[in-house]
Image (tube, rainbow, N blue to C red; front, side, top):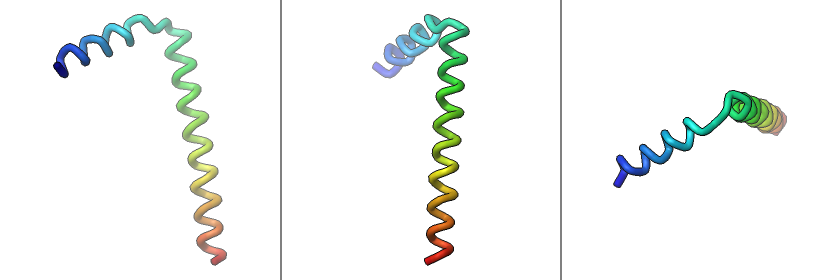
Length: 49
């Protein structure tokens, strides 16, 4: 069951064009930046309190 799912995931990832992969990477970078900003804000609030 897991082997079949893994094969499907590999097949899906092979369908991605280089442009799609780049967009996914950029999306991940945006998520990391947002997470970093939220974390920094939370730490600042924690230090003030």
